[in-house]
Length: 157
Image (cartoon, rainbow, N blue to C red; front, side):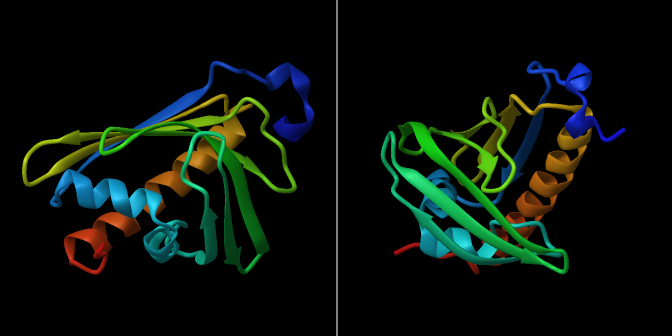
């Protein structure tokens, strides 16, 4: 049985944590995670195209990320819950046609001088299948982000 349809497999305690150090200053990394013009370049797994990003970067502001794969459209939506410039962005996370009501992503930015440590924590993932899917997706998107930012292809005014 698909675990998405089996309430017995739901576990609000499931979470994933990904940490990566980028060869880029913290202000640049933070801006690339919060500026829709930059986000559209990388915010999708490597085999998926990010078509558009809209984001109202304020507490309570909404975002919408439209990704497209060979399987069709994938649209992530949510609201910003906490924003501390160059330190933290926290937002709710769900799919437009698949609600994950308690899903929250926290992205922490640690200034290490010329480099930045980013820690992404995704909590409230409903089951092991979703956890594995989101881990693959986030890991791939962060890898794409690393390649672009470290090649100076993400530049913020």
